[in-house]
Length: 363
Image (cartoon, rainbow, N blue to C red; front, side, top):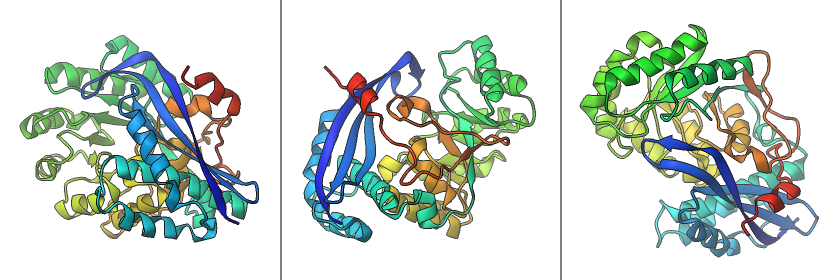
């Protein structure tokens, strides 16, 4: 089998209502480059990368297409050759930013193709460690919500079967922010996991202060309290608090994760499939976490990250963000314990819906 063509589609998925965030302002859309790897035997691998609010999507799209020569003619069974080629090819541009995002789109589709060729889900292709993965509802509990809205939405997630939820806090008015988190805890009860995300908006002192104020709320983790490249600051926050610190969604490739582990700056590492450069690098990051006895969670891309976390001995929480659901035929299902079930379907187990692609194609 040989890969004969790399094909792309762009889709514009509205986020309704728009989401108010501390770092990105208003999120109005998730705009994706869908990547298809076609073969001489009729199998097609699928993957995606994205941009928020259509920002720089053209640059991402161009990068994906510019990397087609790395994969055309490749036997999917020798998929490791893609990264071997890419590290040489991308050396001049560097191993962060749009070049790595472009690689991720292709590597995502290549792993899907390998699973389909073997007739196995990617988790089973690797060798799954478990049939399901703990997950948390991340598509709500935003800064723009009132306390009443937070409580209704949190209770709604629990009613749907989730056993963990994530809310957000800003860098100012710590008493009000802690009261909002306390309201979420009250709504879900003591047995549901609660994560809190600061979206990199705090100083070290602010993070330690609000973190100490939240200690009695029994949080699963406090996420990205300070700017992502301040590993020393993250380490200071982690050392000052009993609440676990989660971070890592903004670093690139397994080398970025290794730097975090060396700095001992987080209790939970959460690689982003897009910034890792795809599953090959994501798995390397996950195994580094295992070697350092640090849990490995995920950031976004639940339809693909599910299989990878299931195959990692230290796989932790799957972030269930529904932004990409509208373009998939299938949906993630939860078991009785609120875990995301690894499907038996081959590849990622989630496939793009051509009708939805046509619906969300920009005009």
